[in-house]
Length: 336
Image (cartoon, rainbow, N blue to C red; front, side, top):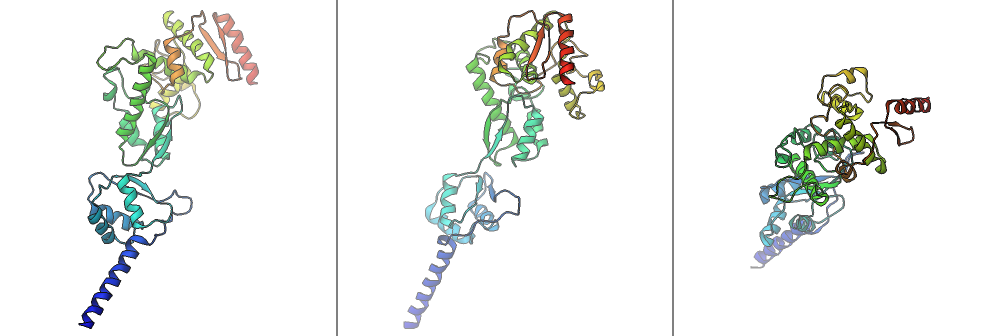
């Protein structure tokens, strides 16, 4: 009888020690390689608790998948999918509680005003969320904006500039969709996007295209309505826009932009080449911010038809070609 009791005591002690090791003793956080970000574990939607426990053990976050599953059998809480960051020592109980709460890790992606979809794709990749090519594929599908802009060739122009928090559990379509939702929200506040179920009140395609050119032409907020006014005047007078940013975008679409505009770019046969083809390009060339959208909606009423840089972050405007020629000479002297 004593032997049996001693055996039971040993089993209980061993079980207690195993549970202490498996659930209570903090485990050191996995150490990333030099220069690498902290370790994260991605738990996909639909994974079983057994799969989750196995992934956590394989990543070195918990010492025992079995102990984790025993805890789950006792608590029976829903384990939430997502990406989790483990950068400090934690017990398996703490790990379990975090996953049950959905304390997921987010990657920050900042989209400044004027970023085009190529820039955004690079930012998404740099944030560790996946290949840029995958984001470009998602942004290249215009279906989700066709209710507002049936002419859209992609989501370019509608990926609203902002700071976003994404997780690797989200798809590229989810990320592009969040930027599009932000555009819809901001657009409704500006009176640019109609309420759901209401007919469009503006030519959204043309307006966002104009705003995207204005966005790329100047970083000075006070100049944006003037720039918009110049381009609307040129459209009215059937003068080619000759907007350098549209030429750059054409080169980017063709995969040959090298950081400078060359004569071959000005001669390129692209509908985005506003030196070669009059009128607006076939769609936005970047994703404009609120100020540029407002400028496109409310341009300055002016006789200006031309503008050129003053080499100090602003522009000189002119109503005649002679005035413009003098401003160009001043610009060239300033460059020298």
